[in-house]
Length: 166
Image 1 (cartoon, rainbow, N blue to C red):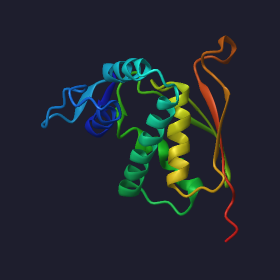
Image 2: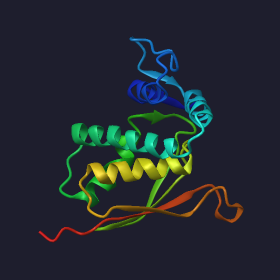
Image 3: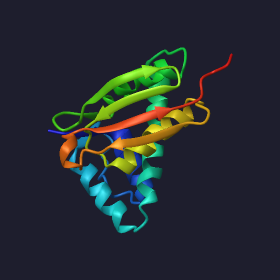
Image 4: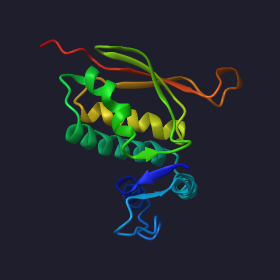
């Protein structure tokens, strides 16, 4: 069963400006994954698709805080490599998704995922993470989508940023 942790549920509530959204209980650390679907339904009702990308960016910043608290890295490339570990601190159980790194080098990463989040949210999340890491000229591309029948069940993203000259 899919579950999300309290900080992510609180973030969803703040984005929706709806404190009752997650029915947050002070003693509860994990919430049902059904909140993800409810979050996107309520976000969609606001009628501005860009909100999904902005919500993803906010989650990217939350992931960055977790990376800083729990992991050590020396550059953006190694931080991106640690990202799936930090992601697992927020979402767990069946349906939490899988992250697969197909390529990782300085200035470029190609990853695949099948998370419960939509593509705009994920693009925002990855862009927010790169921006928070100080990546210059960061671009997130989404060349392959799991919604396309031929691609199977994974979305593919390419993360591109300028290499450090120092």
